Image (tube, rainbow, N blue to C red; front, side, top):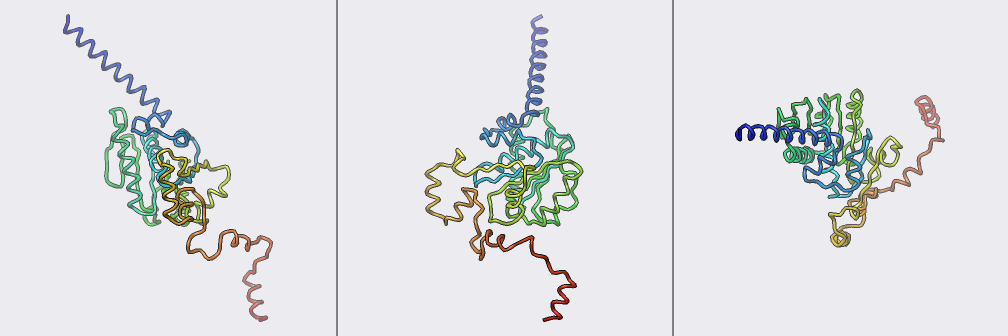
Length: 280
């Protein structure tokens, strides 16, 4: 009788443990913040907002070391684990940067792995495929490497301010049929390119997040003050205050160039140009 009681008790405990895991699985499906906590990340307020956002297009204008790539990798992992047959694409200007973002995602998966979560069925230094059909692929930001992908559920572009405009335009169609999401994250790099344009002119279609270094609890005021004295002012304002400042090698500032442009001036068409040349 004692042995039977023990067997029954073990079976009951296993059932309770399974029920707890399933409950946690569903709670984390509904709230990515819970998954982040289990991975060892205590999200800042803005990071929690990002994890819980359902916005289709998000742009993060954040200082260095503010945690933008860390929390974005959690978003990517959550998408892959809880959205079956999804493709998460990680793009950066270089392969090394893409691999760093990918490594964070894999490390977080290893930290939270349980039998209930989808399991890796194929894995390399550049991609991972899960048993639920989802894939995460990291690529350097060149047109040659990204063409051919389609049906992307989540497109993450890291260091977006130094990604070429042509590449951004070529990857946008990847989310056309999947109704996928886009996250752009970067510190600013001058008043130019699609990242600056999206931030300033993207309209209400974009969920914007701006976090300066003094808003990050992991960066001390003393360290920032010392850094302000050490590096050039324009570089500090760009890297830590998230300002779109003029580049060091720029001959004309952005406002002067914009002031020279006008929609009221009629352009010369080919025929008119020919007549102009013939006259003079």
